[in-house]
Image (cartoon, rainbow, N blue to C red; front, side, top):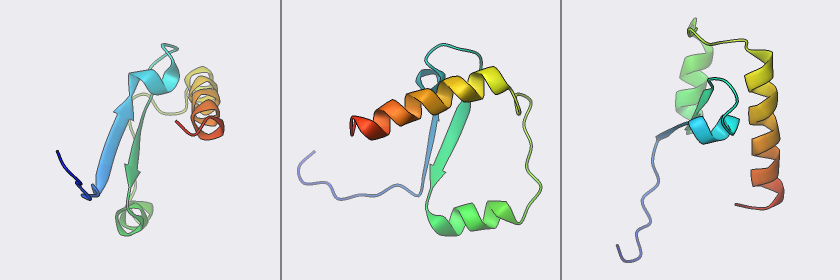
Length: 68
């Protein structure tokens, strides 16, 4: 694809985000969508898993530091 400047509204991520530790996923979205979610009750089956969350935070830190 040549010079595609398309910007998605929502991206879902998972598996690699936790580097194989536990079950974790995430959603990246534009601010208006994030703000709409903040006004609703949202839950999931695998929420609040501290081990998976710590692994994902470490992975995201590396991605940010190495500008991947």
